[in-house]
Image (tube, rainbow, N blue to C red; front, side, top):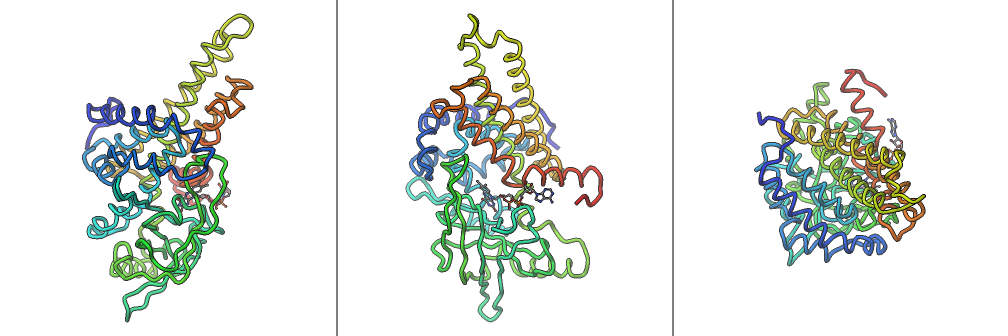
Length: 404
Ligand SMILES: Cc1cc2nc3c(=O)[nH]c(=O)nc-3n(C[C@H](O)[C@H](O)[C@H](O)COP(=O)(O)OP(=O)(O)OC[C@H]3O[C@@H](n4cnc5c(N)ncnc54)[C@H](O)[C@@H]3O)c2cc1C
């Protein structure tokens, strides 16, 4: 087992500086513009692909050549320090790739993960479709169905997914579907829907509070037909798993949950990146802004606020790194990932709100970035498991009881 260390190795420091440079030089100058446009920032994602920051190779390299697990959270914090909406546009395809990694066979991973990204000349996107209009936290309430035709070795999917990052504009949609409604969340399976499949379309595009450069939309599946090879993990494995569950034996965690477990430390790192941006900005502002003849930071009430902001950000980062390291060692029991995400989401919302306070009236205007960072921070309390769902997971883990 690799030892846990807060000291980054040379490769990680190199990646940290590289992503920071891209954020500073390419993302920050256009962050406000893309937030106002509320559109997917294709030219910026293309630039990220040109330097290898957007692409399956970067993800594979960061995941396979890093025994510590810290490379991804380090890189993601720098990216989201640049801008969370653009950061999400760059990272969103990774959710689909993570869904394929979590449930797919080696052949499926090799076939579909690169197609979630394409390359700089032919940019492609991935989308992970779990949530539905009537069931977000309640994964057992999903209704989108998948029915199998054995004679044709073909699946037919029907239903609607809601709140999907890159939904409808993606080339690869990974869709969680209900195979056996009687088994609740244990009766699900994940499918890859290949590019240009008939019957898949974008529903409404949401107008959002924050991360507005990231595209979020409904995905409608109307008699979508895919071959048996699109079922992640394959039919034999699915049949075995369903038989185990029907016999009352322990089934594996459902497809959506496996993906979320793997990505929670990364989501915590996103939140920390936003918080750090707001903290650094308000620290500098507090040194330069004069009131009553002195810089406002000379007032303990402002300086102590900044001291608390720095402390909370470091605490959140340590939880995120611990969770990422545990995940890498295969020791991840879910609650550590949930703790990291819970803490980081709250810290991000609190720090960005304090940053507005430190900037006073200016902080409340769109002329300064802190109001955008505050809007961007809030999503981290909501997606990939809300604040309350993280509490549920943690309370079940620490008590061993079925807390409802
Ligand atoms: C910008 C954005 C991007 C997203 N991207 C994706 C994506 O790419 N793929 C995807 O599948 N989904 C995505 N989502 C969906 C997201 O994961 C869900 O919104 C989230 O899981 C919450 O589900 P919900 O919105 O249905 O809220 P609900 O589940 O209806 O929850 C409403 C409130 O009730 C609380 N609550 C619910 N159940 C309990 C309980 N048992 N105990 C205590 N409190 C409870 C919740 O914490 C919340 O406060 C995205 C959402 C947004 C906003």
